[in-house]
Amino acid sequence: AQKVTQAQTEISVVEKEDVTLDCVYETRDTTYYLFWYKQPPSGELVFLIRRNSFDEQNEISGRYSWNFQKSTSSFNFTITASQVVDSAVYFCALRDYGGSQGNLIFGKGTKLSVKP
Amino acid sequence: NAGVTQTPKFRILKIGQSMTLQCTQDMNHNYMYWYRQDPGMGLKLIYYSVGAGITDKGEVPNGYNVSRSTTEDFPLRLELAAPSQTSVYFCASSYPQGRVPAGELFFGEGSRLTVL
Image (cartoon, rainbow over all chains, first blue to last red; front, top):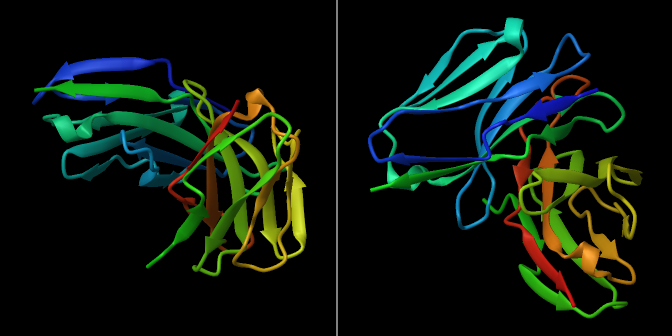
């Protein structure tokens, strides 16, 4: 079955610390897409990154980086030098190409609190 | 640049009342989705649509109905509201890549519904 697990429910760090959010997925598909979304306290969902299963290169965008490893079915997200504005709930998601036409299967989210 | 627009943003219903959550997108996306988000549970798919006139059930469809008469609009109707439908509802849309919906989902800002 398609599944996304974010084992860390809540993480609290002090500003400028690095933090890694874990994501482990299960899928039967050979081609699939993985996503990360950010949900700040205001409630909207902000798209951060999409990665397809053929591209295992790590990606860096400013203070954000993503480590995709098919061998361990993981797609981890690291924030370097965290800031208070990074406080949010972060969701990892897997695109489902089964019966529901590309629905995103979400993990339960990791709540990140960055304290000044 | 409206994107996905949901109304209303907040609503309080009494048990047994009905209402419709409106969702409109101006990106000409074929795929549209309704999710609900409960605390600590991620997002779960209620209904989805692959184009005008075509809708199907997601993971948690009971108590809801949808229609898709145009590409732009995908309203969600709650019939006989129950306290279990207290949640935050998100509408989303996506574009295809080739024959599959591979792109990220664009989300509305959410509608917070309370049933008392």
